[in-house]
Length: 199
Image 1 (cartoon, helix red, strand yellow):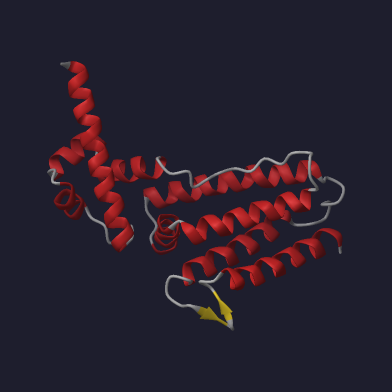
Image 2: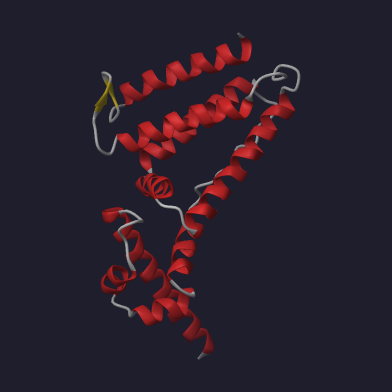
């Protein structure tokens, strides 16, 4: 009986999380409310609060289920510049394909609350780990170079263009919804990286 109750709760929680996901996909994090999730899932607000410990708990549970902070650790098998480029390319692909991630970044930019603060902190911790690994591989080459500043310039540009593709198709002649357009962007990022590392 106890196992059956646990299974029923797990199934219910999953249905609520699926309803939450569908609402976020349609409206974004900012416009998604507990009333909408309750209506779509078919469960009461009281039950959602009981199972997730509150509205913030539901947000956290949903975000924890997604791997938004994949940390790349650099091996010794390739040149570091190639590995950094792979990291940048992976970020581009993830942002292009993952609408939920773009919605989360948009929410983080537009609203400051306990949940978005935690998202920002986790993103920063992931970035710190990656930058620390890069510095450990090239201590002499990177001496005097501001790795953190270079990182945020590149990632900020990627974030902006990825978010912008949801509202416009072309910026300055670059097609944001085509592989050709992103190929042009990636090529220039690669040139910038090489110039910054070896120039």
